[in-house]
Amino acid sequence: MPSTKRETYYEILGISRNSSLDATTDVYLREISFWERIASAGSPEANEKILELTKAYLTLSDPKKRAEYDSELDFDFVLLDGKAKDPEIEEAYDLYRLGHKKSYQEVLSEFTKFRMEMGDTLWVLKKTTVYLVINLLLYSGIVLFQSLYQNNDEVNQKENEFYFNLFSLLFLASSVIGYLFFRFQYLPKELQKRKNKRD
Image (cartoon, rainbow, N blue to C red; front, side):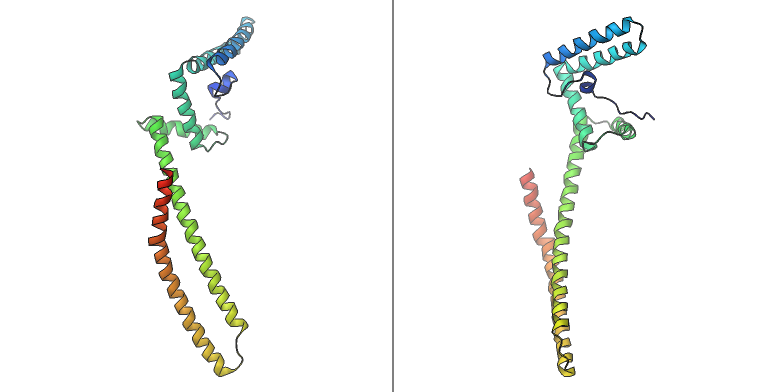
């Protein structure tokens, strides 16, 4: 497989995505003039470059074609998270797109929906982890308190252990009940608010 990443039409012409049609045309004419002089000197690479520049210009100079091309670039950018493109990953996504009879916008919409759902799942996991950590810290504090103020008197020690065990049992039971309320009452409501704000 090739080891070099494919250039975008913008990169081929050396312009930014917000360049105007006039600026695009000026750059194209300047580049073509340069490479035609190189081609007249007998360079086969120059002819390839001229074809490459012309293909890029014909796409970017047509508003409709340019909009469609930009949507394809946006699709690639989202999938690859804006990172440098790996040729093998690019090829894999090309095969995926060819294998699905959907437009770029449809596939992009599906991917965006999937990404939001994953974000919601991670949000729930984060909230649940915070709840469990808080309960763990509270229980650790109870155990530490009991060990620091343990009475050496055997009778009182047994009585303290009884009350400690009873309190621990009540704490664990309340934690379980609290978790069920937190997970199945509080989180679904907050998750719905989160989705409503996003929509």
